[in-house]
Length: 102
Image (tube, rainbow, N blue to C red):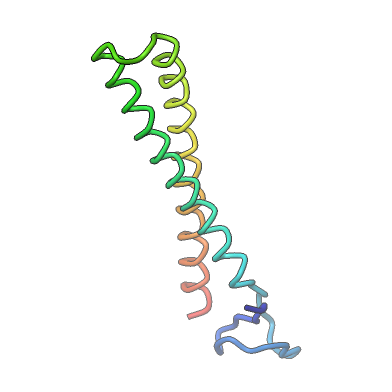
């Protein structure tokens, strides 16, 4: 994808007479994918850690493994929050673009 000029008249490439904002659709897509991927990785990590903790409660894991899983769960929770914030920001940016140029 390439950059396109977004204006009240629609999307036009390289129109010098239109006062507009240049938006890279690729950048928006990349940001959304990064946030979504972060959220997915956090979810996978939380699932793995929950399994380790459940095994620890059942006596199948060492205490060190449980402690590591608990600490990693906190880190995964922060990663999920950051990923969700990125997706939310992209959503707001796209909404603003639509409102401004529709």
